[in-house]
Image 1 (tube, one colour):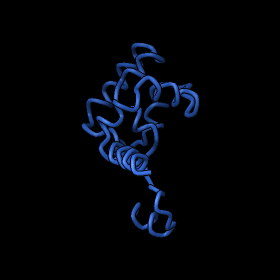
Image 2 (cartoon, helix red, strand yellow):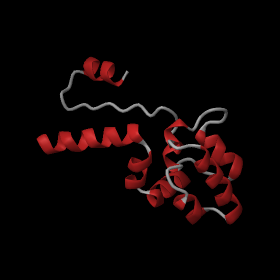
Image 3 (cartoon, one colour):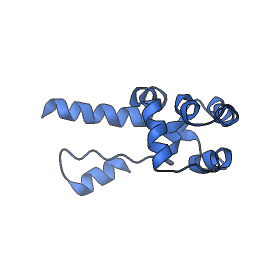
Length: 115
């Protein structure tokens, strides 16, 4: 699908990325972000989710990632909390755990190095 989009757009430096599920899937790359912003009970619940999946990009079987977080943390704010958690998790951990995301970032870096 990404290749079809790239061909359709037709710009040599356009590198499409389709997140398989929601942005929040990337947040489950590490529990550090949840640990920083949530209480111990919530942190323990997010850890259980992380332990169920070797690839956070696959979290979406019966409940989408944001809804999982909202089920654990009632006042979760997708924009503000999501960005804070992502900052704590860090792109390196996301790239380590999420192959598709890593491949896209690496393609961006390669493109920048050839400019």
